[in-house]
Length: 152
Image 1 (cartoon, rainbow, N blue to C red):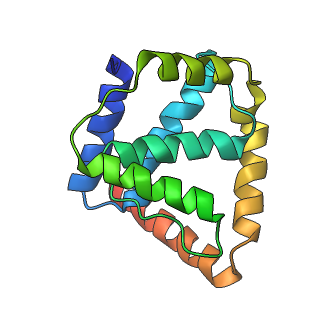
Image 2: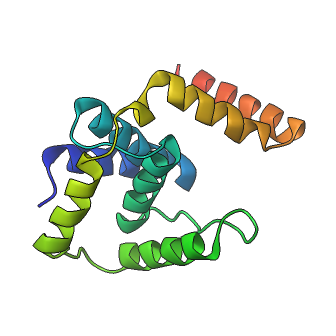
């Protein structure tokens, strides 16, 4: 059963969609929620990358039109899973069997909590930015500034 927090995240993502924000910005709400879960101690994650992946998967399953990563960016397995999540998001809400749900949750509970620390997130953001070119980084900064100006 989705908790109140999940509903609020879906609502925030829906609002982002109405405002015309990109699917990636809408998915950001789910990633943010996942970081909060880890910080609250609800569960852990092996790495920051895993925590982000969980958030993106939840976003796709909730109907955010976030396309699977392009070929060469990730493994074929990740792309396949992203396609599957996207397809599930297009269909109606589905229930995970209690046994599977429990297994996934208990596996995550055994993982560490440092994946959502500010230091880990900063390291992830830097390494991710380094993979992009200077032009892409500059364009992202300009877009961010424009968004902040619009919201301010």
